[in-house]
Length: 125
Ligand SMILES: [Zn+2]
Image 1 (cartoon, protein in one colour):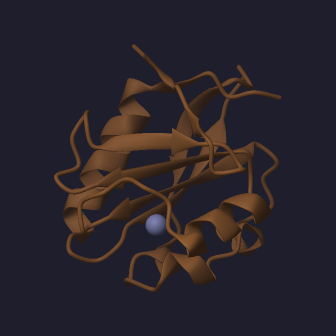
Image 2 (cartoon, protein in one colour):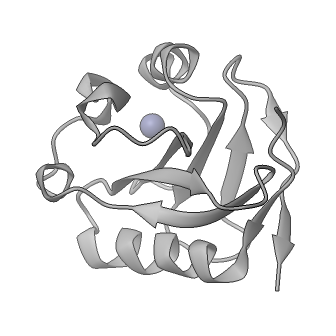
């Protein structure tokens, strides 16, 4: 399974969520819909919105939902580069991971696979 794109609406949800929580970190889960290669839903859990370090996050805290394919989180410090902790999280959870950095716009996010390798995601719609 390979993730090829993200719906524009989902990207906007991530941007808005990251802005709303700044300077705390935003964290959400990415989910696919009927097309298993396109991220079409952002899943936010209440316990994720209180600035806990994302490195402690485990995707299996999420409700059982096999359409969840990865995570999105923010870097309020401004660089969308995975930290050592991020790389560990990526390797354990899901297949696609988005990091959005301040100022949370179309040019300040990147997507990575579970090996921490940058991947291209097409914005759909
Ligand atoms: Zn991070």
